[in-house]
Length: 97
Image (cartoon, rainbow, N blue to C red; front, side):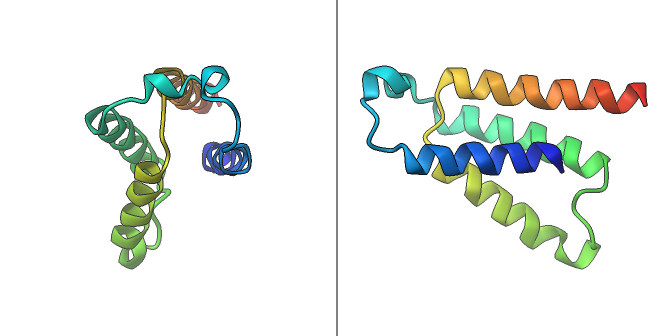
């Protein structure tokens, strides 16, 4: 849940700062749809493991909304690495507790 909150916050910041010069926001390194799909799958699998997609009757629409959200963001290589790192740390913290 914290990861989703951080993701939504960063997304909001990105939308509010869309007029930033592309040289400072690394827009030249926008990743392919395949890379975004892999990231989405990674998040979805891990969120599924912790029971995020609940109740079951709403799971499919939640997953669809989740995928749509990812597809609207012009992610860069740096963004992808940060998201992988965020989720990896959340998984590690969850295993320790």
